[in-house]
Image: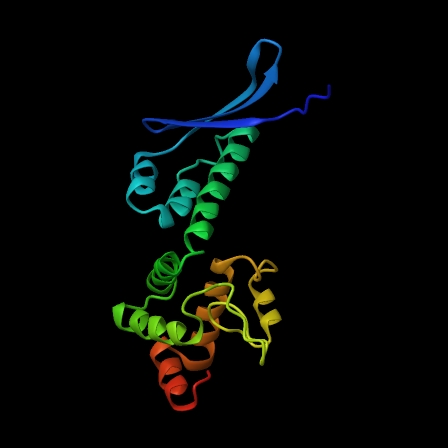
Length: 194
């Protein structure tokens, strides 16, 4: 009988300390050959609970790169990837995609509620915030209905499967071409494309 080797990652947050380890199966149960610890300041630990969207940036900023060992940097990268993965998974639903877009609009572009409302109306009309939306006739794809869809590679090559990439591209496109989401919505209402 052939036994496949499996690795199990175990994460535990105790106070402001993150404990990462990998467990390997052995004849005696699970062995823990490697462990890494990273210190997370209280701001990042609190932010994770209150706003998971912003936790990756706070976590990354909380690490003192000058005093960290290589293992700690790797652990920080793992934690950052984990936070970003949660953001992507959340954006796979229309409600989650709206939340991601609102954070991007307000924190990265400085827009307020009015501009978010315009973007919400625009993308609800285009794709209903479905990252898998595809127009068979024109070839437009994604939340922002990029045409051609390959334009989204300007942000990342994972545009087919990553709703956050689609949102980032869409907001960038709207601000470059129309200055604001409300400007794009006004154009869309007249021509039903933007």
